[in-house]
Amino acid sequence: MEPVREYSALVELLDHALQKGLYVSADVIITVADVPLIGLNLRLALANLQTMLNYGLMKDWDEARRGAQREKAQINQAE
Image (tube, rainbow, N blue to C red; front, side, top):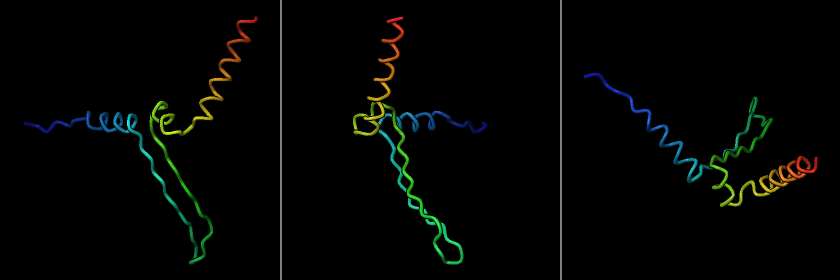
């Protein structure tokens, strides 16, 4: 018998991350000769849009985007 890889594990992990959400935060300091030169504060949020809206993330972006689409639709209907 030959081993068989299960690719469904990656799909299930991604599906779970999109449904529940994943948030990663990292602080990075780049130094040269013990002198800190650059400090980075990195944040990553991975989720589907509805999950992000439920947590209050990207709410302003979503409302602005939907408003712009409504305006375009109204302009197209007027023409």
